[in-house]
Length: 61
Image 1 (tube, rainbow, N blue to C red):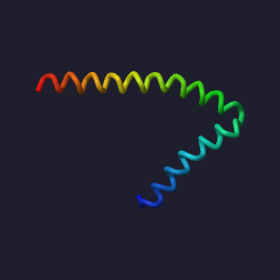
Image 2: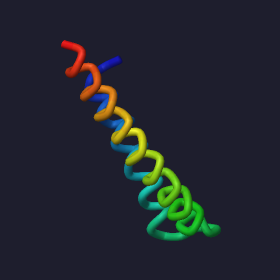
Image 3: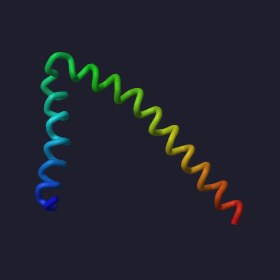
Image 4: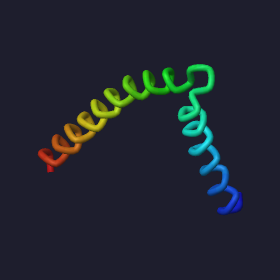
């Protein structure tokens, strides 16, 4: 795909959900906030596991 089309599609996919969340259509803002709360915890856990695996890998060398 053309790089400009990829950038445009990416911007649309980033801006559209933020706009829907900001305008709070049909409670999307509440649902997005709850999803973000749960997803943030899993993201932090996964980053922690990544650092643990990298540390263990460095100990082997």
